[in-house]
Length: 108
Image (cartoon, rainbow, N blue to C red):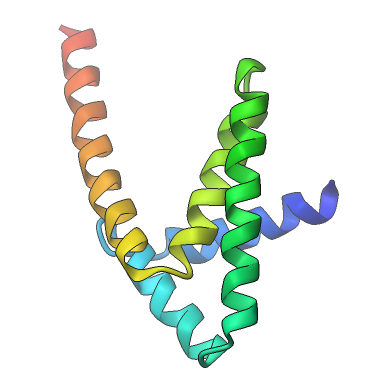
């Protein structure tokens, strides 16, 4: 479990360095340069991402761990599919906007 935690933290810190709205596409580009078209590795990451999302949904009834699994799975898939990375970037911007609105409304 500690290996998975370290893996997630490492990837999170790499993605976090970029600006919101560009993080996932930039990470996608970096991953593609390293993989250089390795289809087996690409499929492996996508399958692991899907399994993590399924695990997250199953654990979704427990506080905490389900959310982490889903986010990690989405990140893995986004690192392999450009259109998915674009969706994650747009989703992050919309989520940040929604959270700012929610924060303003709750402090009023």
